Image (cartoon, one colour):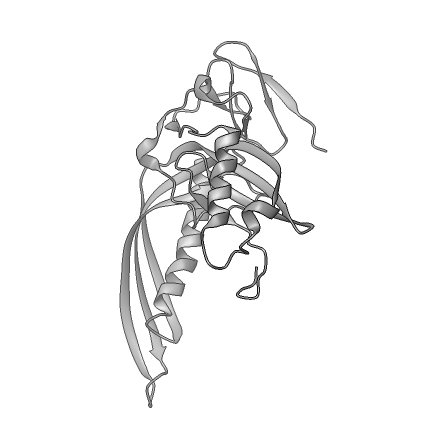
Length: 250
């Protein structure tokens, strides 16, 4: 078990608790955000998205999801049992990136193979989960940025858990670049079969540090445990485990 540590908020003097590895923390009493190692004020934009659902409503959304889609067992809504419902405000970095990738590759589907060159130019608000050991389907999560507001601890549900960031902006930007490079290699391989070289030119803007409400719901079906990740702002299922049927597999 990790040892919870504590510092004093330099704004109001209240205790700020944090776990080893966390480097950005927010006071739950006044909303002041600081870098743990230095105690200095967090000067970049810190936003949040509001949760719109209570536990009963969140369960109802999952039940409705169970009823939809032909791959799900027909008795899933009636035969499943909700085991856990937890709301977590996860920390994310939203990194605005413009990237131009120029590549050269070999198109081998012709005889003889030909060398092709191409360019991929994209703009992203690339989402990076600010937790190093955790896994989250960031590519499946369309974070509703239009609903973001300045971080306000008073608007967080009492039953919710709030996690601090384990990385700063510079590290988040580097992770975003690495992930975009891999994504652009995938895109380039839609045009060529073998990449000879690829060069990426990145231009980044000011990142946004944001807390978003995510419901983690576990359910049981025929003795097996499954998990559903739900967007607390929109009610959309981000990712959900589906029991195997004769029509499909997990």
